Every structure is written in structure tokens, then in C-alpha cells.
Image 1 (cartoon, helix red, strand yellow):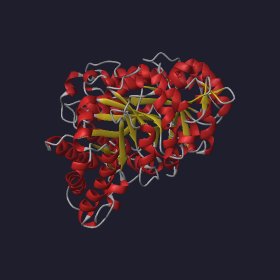
Image 2 (cartoon, rainbow over the protein chains, first blue to last red):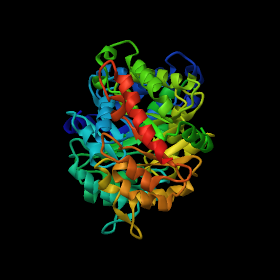
Image 3 (cartoon, one colour):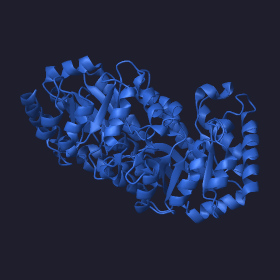
Image 4 (cartoon, each protein chain N blue to C red):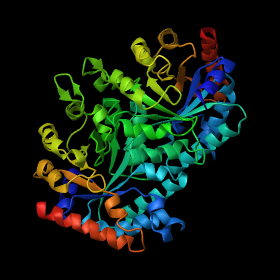
Length: 273
Length: 273
């Protein structure tokens, strides 16, 4: 999906919500937990219930990998369903990959190649290994790399805020250096909602780039603050909520409750746009 | 595998060689490329040919993921074979993962859990997200996290050498801070052979930790230099070679040629030990 197509979708749905599909069997409704294709059926119900309020879906690879190969089969079924729906959605593999050039090429093929098992629009990448670990993800037309800048967790304070060189913070250096590796048409950044007060500094370096913002909801970030400091004329935000939507209920009404939570967020987003 | 078991294995085999199983169908011998279970059969032949000269195997996840779900089936067969062999080997998932705490827990389960599909001894992790992204990998007995410190690629110069705080380099800060997250019994570090001259600085901070050293061979690193600066009384090194061994030939003699290359490295290592 190109940048313009994403912007159009945001305006059509009046939403910049990303639903995180972090499926954990222990938190799923009991009737699906041991059902055949239970994970896919759970995702399908969540997608059907939320797609009118949502522009993006973000499966977190860890949760599928933790189920072994069967988990990836469930992920493939989910992606096949999303591709077959006839309603567009931006799809993000939250995979936090990144390796030397010839290896990152293989990860790009795994997640972004239209002929592959998944055909995601975008992939999250850790910046530690530098240029050649990131650039292979920018070569597919209409596909994106989403680089970690400022993450939503406590561990973000271990390195990301350390001062480097002429008193920039590491996350600012990552934003600055990575400008040479991609453009606002193929590169986004992860900036955690729990650090919304840093968005002004982020926007000073990447005024146009889309930001993927996790941490609203269960992790404590505020949508209002994220919008205040992060919104651009093209929106420029994808705000993710995972647990707050997909586990709004663990009963048979899980999909209805997910729809309600997604709708609430969409209404707040619509008011801002 | 515990630290002591690893040290014993190194002394028994007189080797600290790690063979990187970075299987790319385009580089495999023609007769296996399209065979059923060709990737597994390739790995099996490489393992059989090299295990007497080797203490560790390191499948690079990207190469398996690039083949889709079928690639992970081939990886599982490879791991099942290694576990069934009756000859011990330390197994490393070269996966470069790392995410917020609850997500890293899922990655740990995916790769290290003895009840999971793979049951690796160790996993490579990127440090950018800090403590809670790394600690979940240290909770399994006899299992390891291998943290990226100084990587072998050109992109390593983008961030890893930048001066932080009181004029340490970022990779030194990673080594220092991460001392609080694990011990030499459950944490190793990646230090690229292409930066062997940095090993003195690395050893000043982590005198006892095992180092996983990629970059000997195809990437240009020197085994002699790595040993000069990195060896400890307990060896403290796992030196990886991937392409130089597994693609020594792409003919039907690939396994024999892999054995020769592994044997050559083992003899150099034996002389050093």
C-alpha cells in the first residue's frame, strides 16, 4: 500500500487505528481455545468486527511463533483472509527483525514478498545493526520498513535516551541517520505512546514520516497527547491498541466488545482528523 | 547446555567451531534443491560430516523464514535430528529478536522452551529495547541469551561506535549495562571477527563471558586475531563459519568438502587450545 493509498484510507474510514493481533491462547474465549483453527477464527471474528473502524492490523510475530509452526499456519490463514476481504487494510508484521545485509534480504522476502506466505505491507525493524540491516526492506514497491526509534517499554530508558555525539539522544540519532536509508514513502518509525511528550522532538527530525504508536491502552499512553504532538496534515500516525481491543472480553461476546472498543477509539480519531 | 558442559565439549572435541546453517536453496547442490525435504537432507549431511569438528550449530532463522512455513518445517526436522543424534552440540537460533517484556517471553517460549518445536540452547537478541526485552530469555535453566554487542557488518559503524555518556562507545555501554541482566552462565555476546582489534576492549568489560564470533571466512575476519585477543582460560569463544563450510562445494561432494573445511578450522583451533 502506498503512502497516498494509506492517507486516503485514513480519510475514508476517519480512523488511524491499528489493531494489534497479539493472540495468546490463554486469553482467548474458552470456546475457541482448543477449537481447530481457533486462532484464525478468533482473528477473523476480530477483523470482521473492527475493520470499519480500523486502517491497519499488526500481528505480533512472537505470539504466533510461541505456538510453534502451527501458529504460523494460523497467521497465514489470517493474512490470506485479510487479502481476500475486499476491504483494504494496511498490514504490519511486528517482527522486530534486522541482521546483516544478505540476511535482512531474506527477512524482507519472508514478510514482504507478494509471492511469499504472508505478503505484509510493512515490517518492524531494530536499528542496532545500521544501514545494511535496514535498506533491504525498502526495495519492494509499496512496502514499508518501520524502524524502532523510541519504544513504549521501561527498557527504552536503558539506551534510547543516552546522549551521543553533540548531545543528541540515541533515538534522535537513529531518526537522523536513518533519513539516508529511506523516505517518508517507504519508512515509518515506532514511537511509544508512553513517551508522547517526546513527539515534539521526534517531529522536529521527521516532520512528515508516519509514526506507528504502540502503548495506548494497556500500557498507559494517551491518545489525546499522541495527537497533540504527533499529528501532521496527512495524519502521519497509526495508533495501535492490542489488548484493550482484542481482550475487551474473554466471553462469547469478545468480537462485539472488540468492535465497541475500536469504535470508541475511531470516534475519538474522527473528531481529531 | 550449561557453561561447564559447553566448556567440556570444547575440550573433548578440541574445537570451538560453530557451523552456521544459513541454507539458501539457490546455493544448494542441484540434486537437493527440489527434493522433498531437501533443506533438511542438506543440513543432515552437513551435520553428519562436521559434528566431530564442531561444538555448535547456528541456523539463521531468516533463511528458513524466507522459504515460508515449509522452511520452518525443515528447521524443525533439523533440530529434531540434532536432538536425536546422541552426540551433543550447542544449538543457537540466530534470530535477532527482542521486544517488550511480555512479547520477549513469547519469543523465549518459541525458541528455548524444551516443550516447543525447536528447543534451542540459545537465541541471539538485539539490545535496543533494554532490560525487559532481554531478561525473559535468561529464565530457562541451561539456556542462553546471546546479545548483539559489536556486529560484523558495515552498518555496525552507524551506531555501535558512537560515543555515549563519559566517552564509552555504544557497544561498550551495551556490554556494561547488560551485566545486570544476566551472568556468564546464561549470557553471551556477539562480537564480529571483522572487528577483532576491538576484542581487547570487549574483554576488559566481559572477561569471562563467551563470545559468539561471526565473520570468519566469507566476511573476511581472521581466526588468529580473534584468538589472540578473545581467548580466555575457559576458551570463551564460539567462532562461526557459515558460507565457507556449507557452500565449500555446490556439487554432490558438498558434505565431504564441508568436512574438510570444518576439519581445517578445527585443527587450527586445537593448536590454540
